[in-house]
Length: 190
Length: 190
DNA sequence: ATCGTTTGCGACAATCATGTCTCATACGGT
DNA sequence: ACCGTATGAGACATGATTGTCGCAAACGAT
Image 1 (cartoon, rainbow over the protein chains, first blue to last red):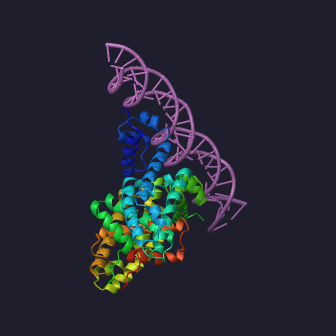
Image 2: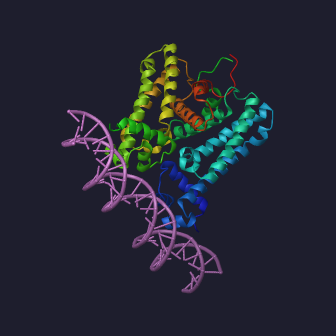
Image 3: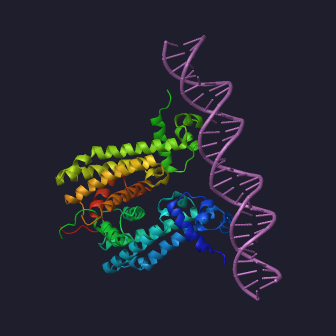
């Protein structure tokens, strides 16, 4: 049975997470196929990268959908928005962990098609954070794009912490949520 | 007068912040010198990168020193530690902005010498954050390395926000400090 | 004006990743 | 067992980058 594109992509991503600058030859070896076969599935390195980016965006989008982000954005019920925000952040942890190298790799942002899709997804998320601000769930004195970039930065934090083994995987949701919402300062007396 | 190594490095960094994958030819052009002259100052690309990494580490170290981090680490006076933490974060903003490409570029972390120095600087900072935890200035329920990585991630946030023009530069210190210490959640009733 | 140094320019070899191609082989279904 | 297909191995051309070199021109100080 020929190794499917999906299988190749999964293995390629795992290797790219360790060595983002891996060559096609290195990727083929990591996947366990020959360079020729890799080129038969992805005619160029760029095509592979775009395919990976596309799949990462699908995952990202799925995290937004699964969290009910769109509906929550149109809602004014703090409970609905809060629940969506928690679910969204938990989903983003998975994406950041699986496609971590794409968080920082600049090559992904060069392709206009990928950049457009990325901007689109980010835009929806920004709208959601704005709704969370209106509902009083997020500080309203922060520029909403700063909030969005904060989530991004904290996902980099997650990735680094897991890469270095600084924290246990099961602790990450709690760490991310509390750090995002309460910060690292001491809990204020309520 | 020959263009000094320092001048070359400054111009090179500015260009690398825009295009982290720039070739020696592109860097030479950006600096305003010929490729041959660039090679006369830095015999190899690796030497240039190590020199840039070394300078970034110097700046980082300077930020720690200027903040009085070492003394504060040995202190138990919350005021001293708090003052140092604020100064440190403000200093790190400068470093992250100037050497931003080094935040994400993996090439810098491959050279053993640079990695060693980086680990050393990070270790001291971790010790400082631990002191801040003991003094009650940072949450004690967070792994100290998570705290350190949080600062790192928020510096990525700073860089992205400035790159995209999402926030004004003068607002960054306040945004970073309040986000780090209080998070993005609504201010708790004190 | 002259001399020593630095620079830019162009050429050069070497290396590496990419993309294409051929061909023999192994595999799978019938 | 047979046949079509996918695969692996390897060769090949190509392009980009790197690092080196030589030489002529520009520059600076005296």
